[in-house]
Image 1 (cartoon, helix red, strand yellow):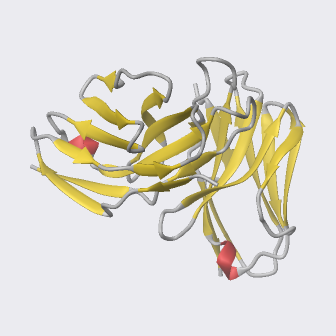
Image 2 (cartoon, helix red, strand yellow):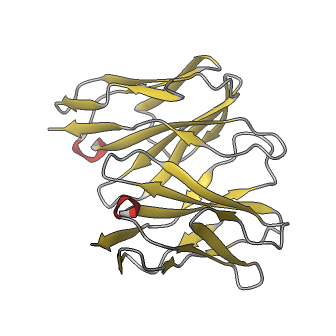
Amino acid sequence: DTAVSQTPKYLVTQMGNDKSIKCEQNLGHDTMYWYKQDSKKFLKIMFSYNNKELIINETVPNRFSPKSPDKAHLNLHINSLELGDSAVYFCASSQDRANSYEQYFGPGTRLTVT
Amino acid sequence: AQTVTQSQPEMSVQEAETVTLSCTYDTSESDYYLFWYKQPPSRQMILVIRQEAYKQQNATENRFSVNFQKAAKSFSLKISDSQLGDAAMYFCAYRSARETSGSRLTFGEGTQLTVNP
């Protein structure tokens, strides 16, 4: 039983292309996140959604557009891919209530832009 | 803004020995949560242990325990009886308790732990 799943796990594409990463969680959580892990392994928040509403939108180029069709899904679409977009992208989810605030992560999507 | 610092980029330990990973953080808030996550070569992020700032008692999970010093803003992780499977990148993370939903995790730079047989 996969709690937080992402597809694809690996994505290799050329500069200028548009690509999407999908995320689904079956934990019944109401909040989902996208994090980016760069080549130095540093993790940073990009977006978060609560019940399909955008809560956090960090300083991310507007080529990145998250979409939450329902509270179990949060997809990330990236337009006009650049070399610097190469990274591992993690989806996570949480149920933010008293005594229940851990974030559970998906397996990550390694994006390589050539 | 909160910051999290892990001053040890790499650490190593002999199997069955004990190792402590350091983490300090900077915040003006009084209520927050702290976490240690483990990232093995599979790159899956695994929650190891959590600590609520309002609790004075240090959290413990089997061989993993923390030393939480709120005044010093320090949150170290102790791994006892180290096993080969403990080899991984370990991240310290901070979460504000002020926001009730969608609160971000702020991560440290990570400490790469090697376990020698």
